[in-house]
Image: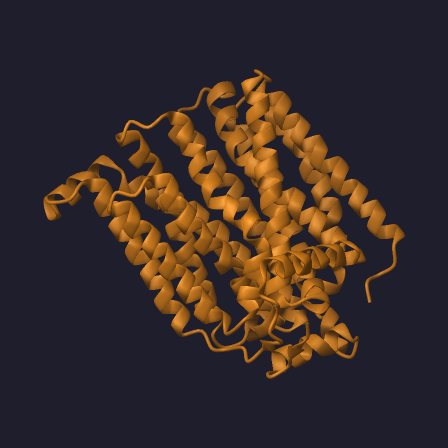
Length: 437
């Protein structure tokens, strides 16, 4: 499926794939100052939408607690949100490529509004998160696909740095916002200003407004001008096309290495997110609210690492960051055995920084190869399928180990050595294979 290059950014990307752009290896520092018009609106819309997603998760957990639902329902919120990324992966790529991507992004934020409205109307929170997850699953390939259409290859690392930093900041601030919205002070203010509604209804209503704002921001993003030939819409044909895309990316040298590394990273990061909380409570005897600050330290490290990589790592050298993943994996077992939080803080920040510096260049490389081999939307759908399947599998293994009574330090050590070994093997494999054309 070939794109019609209707703007200079797409033309530059096509030329880069053919090897005719001499500055594709130029550092992204200067390029990041020349990102195309409308890109920062894309970042703003992405931030507001992701901020609302993460805040809503906290509010929904409080909603379940208030309703007297079992405690094990809480992780099902994230499961229901994530499963759409896996189940709908063959369909959301062609959907993203079927027209202007900013319009689809606006529609998916509107679908999230519908999910929150259903929650306010009495819909079961788990069902509401299915609706919201569908919106997020279709939003992702449109968002990342639009980046590859708007931004030429020499700027992709810088552009991905913006995306990853805004995402991590949204995760951090979303948790803070969610906690604030369910705090006793906020509940008192809600009852004073809106006595006819419960505090949790007021909190969800504010987040509904956040999704509406994100939809409005999408309206300002300019059309990239890229169009693709109409794809088959029959489910069986879409499945076949999706798995052909899977094979094509996994058979590509750089596509396979970057896909494997990012898939492993996001699966491991999802486990580490929960493991750090449990470890801090069990081994450091910290209360849950202070344990959450350790999560924030990791996220701050990711922001720093992503920022450095976005500025200093060009696309042509993306695979050279693989050894950072080995170091990151080795550090995780060390964190598990530190005796107190003063030493844990710098180690966790370093783990996050190495992760951020690893994932941003490799994510940019994966998008570049996906755009060259498939289409923008289809390649992101393949990426989302693999990464979210990894999240679900690794979280399932983590939950099983906890159910068996395995010590949290042993789990963290095993996770670290898995990451170090796997990334080390990927670096060795990449060094032995030729560069992708």
